[in-house]
Length: 72
Image (cartoon, rainbow, N blue to C red; front, side, top):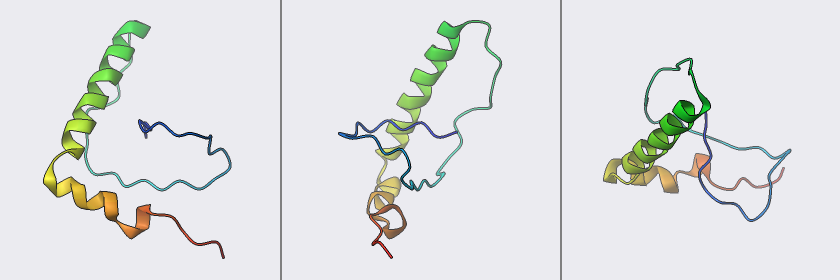
């Protein structure tokens, strides 16, 4: 499951997006309450952002696969 955390100025419905899975955070759970789900999603976001701040992950921000693609 992909969670987009970057704030975009415009929507991108109908456009292609590319993602690369760089790690695993946790298994999927069935939640008793919406608050418990929200709490885990917020923790997942913190874990992802902390992981992406590591030097080994920084190279992916410049990866051509993830960059703009020229129209055919």
